[in-house]
Image 1 (cartoon, rainbow, N blue to C red):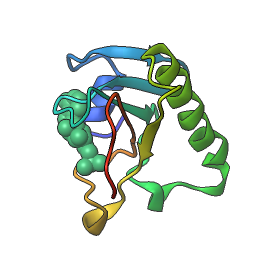
Image 2 (tube, protein in one colour):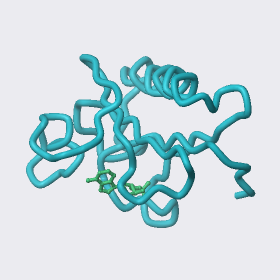
Image 3 (cartoon, rainbow, N blue to C red):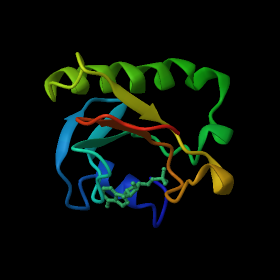
Length: 113
Ligand code: AMP
């Protein structure tokens, strides 16, 4: 666990959240400022600051994030209509929390970008 990382605290159960899924590798919870009817964050339990810090051996873990997003999309009943998966990286990417996370967005028609 990385000191002062809010997402590490969520993984450790030290910060209140709406926990939706957790296994040995990943944790999923609702975004506190949702921008869509369904807005869920799926994160690795281990602290990885961003995709820039992900190592080649993390590829299976990154794939698992997508697999859990798909599972949650089905549970949220948004799979059939579709959804968006987003990973923001760094300042220009709009990343605010530096613990890698996958946004699952859906429940309404999303306009580009
Ligand atoms: P990003 O811009 O990709 O770094 O997105 C960070 C996301 O984390 C934002 O959508 C925030 O609303 C969300 N967020 C920040 N703190 C919390 C928290 N304690 N619980 C749930 N979501 C959070």
